Image (tube, one colour):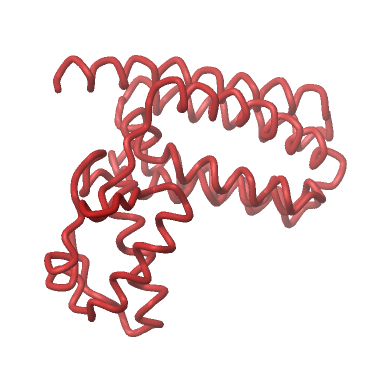
Length: 222
């Protein structure tokens, strides 16, 4: 994984790359994050690394323990289950609200995201799968008319993206996800709020069931 900084804001890039490294599993749950190592990997100053760690601690991706330093946050299944429960409520509501607001441009963007997701599944590209899914939901969040809901959802997804990446890596789950997202899209295309809510909730529930299996397998392997 290439962690070198691109020619953008050093601070923003530091946060982004460490965040992605955690979500993609480069840094594992519970792993200590040594500042000197991060400085070497990223090619940035200790000040930039420390500020990035403070940002990620606020996002609950890492924990900073006095006298021990920062480490990647570990997520219990109870916490993950609570997050999936809240996701189902919020994503269902967001889909229902956006059903009557979707225009042709938004539907085209969603269709493009779905096509990109299907291609990523075919190519077994985990990063592209997460990116395409994010693009798909960004349209729903933008159309639902409630930016606060979007902020909460972003925070929830950030906390469980490591699990999401693992579940999407399953060929069977990935193919089911294509069908489930297509069902959400079809309901939104028809402007059917009830069907959109049901499809969005069903998608989250299916993802939760797969995540439970992944979590149990990870614990058994530990």
